[in-house]
Image (cartoon, rainbow, N blue to C red; front, side, top):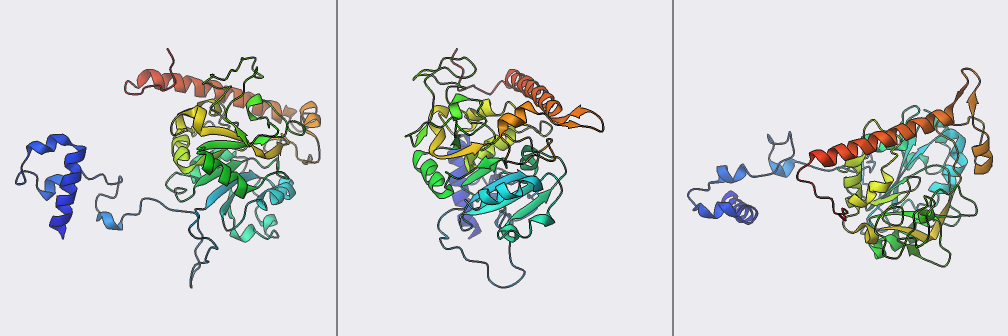
Length: 361
């Protein structure tokens, strides 16, 4: 049996390493061939059949059979959100839009309050993580490793301040799967949302769009043949949705210390699994409202009933030390953006093997 396995391995190795063809059967022994096996770091002392490279977030019973899904052949997806108690009511409405048979729910509690969510019907099947004043990108880098979420077709990494009255998760997944989108987001209702970019604004009467053909808010003219952000090939970061293949790439791009992830959006095209103008898009038919609330690092007494206009005109000031938290967070975000840009440029300069697929020069 082992000899048969070796012969198969030898055939595979010769295909991958043509230079091995110059050796005869006596020269390439099982011991030699095993040197070419790619084992995960640290697993070399184990027989490969016992090595489990990935995991999942499914909770298992202490005894008895597992809970059976209604449609076990349909792959599940993951909804992960950074949440605080102040937005509990809105988060509840959001999660009710994601069917339990198709989605795993993971909540990142940035205020440290977990027990107060137990009264919600879905709370016991959700995974709760807690770390004070940390962003969803801090949590995602540490707890959504690609090998942990590889079982999930799509990863929804959303903010807590989204209105989902016109959103259906099942229809959304069906659209992005049929359209082959690896990176996407629901369009924003321009009449009710805090909108910063034309690209993510809903186009009425459309199922989805992959580009804009007008002047962007950054004053760049966008045309039908435009191939770069902000005209095409990117999404914003309040409600991104990644295929598991795209997420494996994006996760590596997230910097451990740059917790606001500014600058990541315009580079997402490198993780689109191909042409960013084709595999990144905005879904118009399943759209959301972005309230733009200053939740994490923001007000302790504002709720989602207040308009984003009021919030932008009334920054929160801590009376104890007179620090405008929103301003400080924004400064930090801008600093992180510049740091990320510098790191990207440095990485490009130092990597002699990397070829930029979007370098038009």
